[in-house]
Amino acid sequence: MKVHASTVNRTDTATLRAHPFFARAMTGLIRPKMSILGMDFSGEIDLLGDDVSAFDVGDRVFGISPDTFGAHAEYLCIPAGGAIAHIPGSLPYHEAVVGEGAWYANGTTQFLSKGKRCLIYGASGAIGTAAVQLAKARGAQVVAVVGTRHIDLPVALGADRVVNYETEDFRALGEKFDLVFDAVGKTSFFECRHLLAENGIFSATDLGPGWSNIFLGMFYGAMGSRRVRIPFPENAPGFILQLADLMSKGKFQGVFDRRYPLDKTADAFRYVEKGQKTGIVVLDVC
Ligand SMILES: NC(=O)c1ccc[n+]([C@@H]2O[C@H](COP(=O)([O-])OP(=O)(O)OC[C@H]3O[C@@H](n4cnc5c(N)ncnc54)[C@H](OP(=O)(O)O)[C@@H]3O)[C@@H](O)[C@H]2O)c1
Image (cartoon, rainbow, N blue to C red; front, side, top):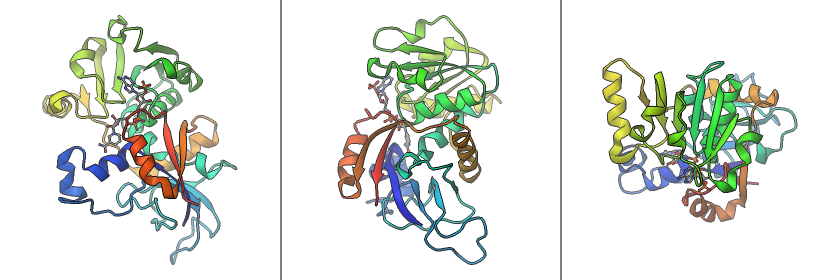
């Protein structure tokens, strides 16, 4: 496919820097094995392999390339059975690069159903903004925690209530949740466990203080419990089809920060590494 847009996201920056460090075993011991990063893509089918019937040349598609990346380049080869779907309606290419954060968010929000209560801490990043929308699409009640500059964003995405972490202590809410999701790796299980309902789950995008989320996840897992989880995402092809469906029904949309041209990719990485972006940073490839 001819790539029109991609993103620079926290998966790209973590792969470039090998963060956490043991990721080096997979991403390259001395330097990154992959010379072209880029997990999100949107673009146009340029050439088809033999026996591909689900797509035609010229089709507008989007998706993610979670194993081999490669979307920070003008052309990308994707398996027809991979994480790829048609772009719903006439959505522009730069608004269709929404897969990375949503895929991680789905690793956690998949445990929600109608009437469940969840608290999303850090609902302004790529994962947090996606988590609010996916939780609402599953019929859950959502309390979102963000800073002052993002105070209006969660409600626009469907959240039922917003807590400003700069002026209010979410830990003192006095409510119980079926899911507490730390979507920016800034809190911990021990700070949040009193907010969990019976059988409630604490999930986090990051390892936690002293890698505690890994150890707690293993500890509770050994006891047959899912109390602490790191949301390892699964089934990327199935998820991208589900996401396309939600987008076509108006139940999911990307939240976008800056756009960079391809020749400013390094600047985009520097910006994303600050951990301050709002939603998604787009790379205009062509
Ligand atoms: N290792 C990996 O492969 C990998 C891959 C993807 C994601 N992740 C992890 O997933 C997390 C989320 O990624 P993302 O792309 O969604 O994040 P992001 O877009 O970088 O999110 C940053 C957002 O978090 C907010 N924030 C910063 N400090 C905060 C705090 N103390 N409390 C609440 N909000 C805060 C920022 O706004 P304000 O500062 O204005 O509040 C900003 O909007 C990251 O921590 C990243 O490490 C890891």
